[in-house]
Image 1 (tube, rainbow, N blue to C red):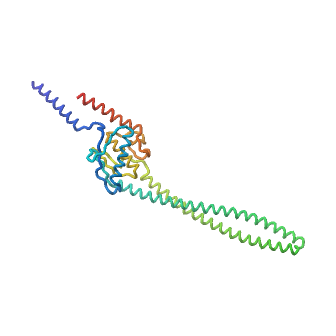
Image 2: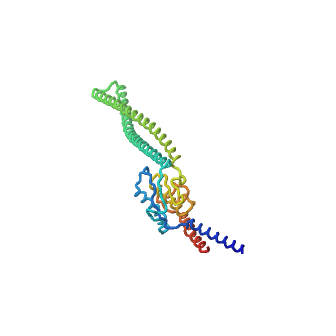
Image 3: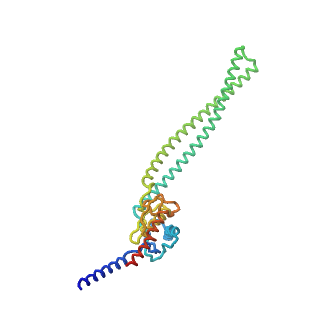
Length: 308
């Protein structure tokens, strides 16, 4: 009799424990999940309406691919989405300031390059004309010298020829002076080109060093530390732009659906951010994870509850 009573008590305790566990445990992908906006730090410089639109875009990433209403906005929704400003977003702001300065430096470099190319084009054009003039001058000078030598060998030139030779000499002298001036102009252009080249190379060197520093801090794929999901709360800590915010939200919404990380660096549920497509869409691995957890998981759950 006592043993029978103990068995009944143990069975009762087991049933009570199971009922209590079922009450606490959450059905995998208990959809639709109602959500709402919680705390939004004003330092993000985003209106709540803007954030709501981006969250809707993030929910659509899942809903369009799955073909079901997975998330519903509700002012008293169970899933709370907070925007918490901390050192991570401050780092992003600092990084964006550095990027702006890099963009300014790049524009200066491009301006230098444009000036250099225009000056080089001018130099090459003047040099081409100078070489043509110099060639013609040397031919005329050689012809003049031969003519003078010929008449000198003959005892002198007739008065009219002498006058023509004298005029040719004056013309050649003036052309020589003009060519010397043109040569000086070309030399000055060479100096300016060399100076621009030196300054441009230094600017490019500094720019490349700063780009490498920036890429070392901000340029590589990083873990999803921009946000997290814990017990019905999504906290967003940092993002660079709308694409990154949408991607982070889609990732954390996946966790809200009880999904785990998957392989393929272009997956929304990949543990690193950076290589996902600009369109913010699900990969085959993402949809497979949803199917495994939300479809097969629910089937197992219902079978288990039915068995109980």
